[in-house]
Length: 461
Image (tube, rainbow, N blue to C red):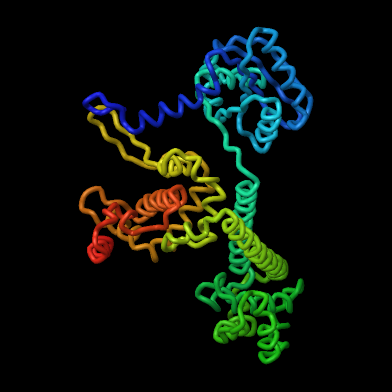
């Protein structure tokens, strides 16, 4: 959108630059070799700039066996009188990375088309919901000629390792959360009294150690009387030996005593469903083991992520932002990749799907939300990092207070946290791309030359 005096906006200029970069790869004389990738069947179509199909081929092969198909496409293009070829595909799984490597070895460039665009363009092709691999390959090629594509990231081995570690950590966090929910559900049915022993049982190491010992003692019998016959003294001694496995050296005796009493008090024992107790408690013990394993593996992966961040030389810059830990920064950067590949901080926020989505037409102004596109795991990592940042970052805390306390257009707490998550991503992009440690004056939009006392007062306000 241009402004009133006819000058281009910042968004116009960035879009023009992006199109110019794409046009340098997809020239007006280029032909497109588009692939519809699958597990064992690969369909390719060679088209010119008018989407006229010059050749088709179906290959029964894996993605890493497509070098011969690429060579065929280059030969077909040369026979048709074209010297410039672009390879295109959807970024499905790992296969597009394999095709990118094959294209690089062949001396040509790969571009990617978002699957959502292919889905929307499929109906516009013949006004039906017809779908076939041959049609999809042709649609991919047509979208490329319209420059509705992008140049994919080619990460170096260090950044690629960080991304894989981030994916592993995200899976472990999901597994740990699932195990915790399963433990609560099973105990609510089989032994609800045990959950009353702690206000936050899943966060209490004393409770986890006591429950591990108790369920080991009960085994598959479901007989809670075995704990009573064990006796308090022996039970407490075993719990003390179990504590180090849960990362604790000291216990909270009140919680451990409450777990023991939940197994010895007839009223609490009778509260559970007797028929479900044996199977439920055995399954709860398995879930406790899953939880302990997931947490131990998460600690290992997080240590590796911090090590990679150190190798990239970004730990000091990222953690200069108050409230952002090295693990939190690594989790975000594992999803973004190298922030320098983004043309602006807003582009990184857009990649997370946290950018505002306007809804206006003429004098009508609808409700504005976030786009929700991009990488969901990046959005989740930024959301998780916000909670600690709001307690320790004065600039972000002030922004949150402003958004939730202003008289006009006041945001809910959830909406404000989403907005702050976007601000956190912008700050992280700024400190890494500029190589400058976080400064409250710059982060708060103040002049860095402002005296320190005035800057502190403004940030606090």
